[in-house]
Image (cartoon, rainbow, N blue to C red; front, side, top):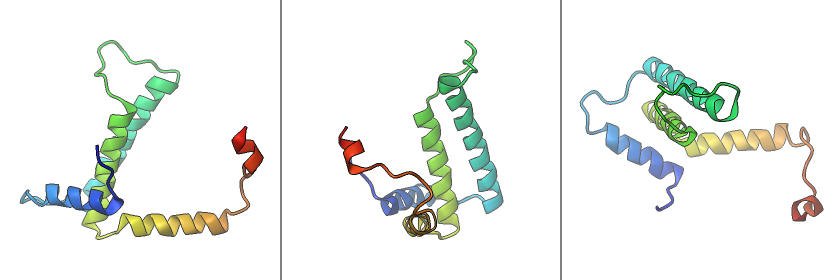
Length: 114
């Protein structure tokens, strides 16, 4: 499978949604969908890594599948609001690298080599 940039992901979702008359849902509907998908992700994480095993009657889904659903809806929301996710990512990384530069204990080079 080929690697895709964030811009390519956003373009691919836009092309998919663009084939339908309805287009993107409203921001409020998208945040509701994102919340729903996040809840489904939380449920899967709880089943696989938490204390709540699946019932035998529950559909088999994976954390990967649910993360994909969250990503799709997140991209839909960004596209509908004309937000470049690559720019948003760069801005948040700059914030973390400056504001939180000394917040966490860094791994020393010797620690990485083991």
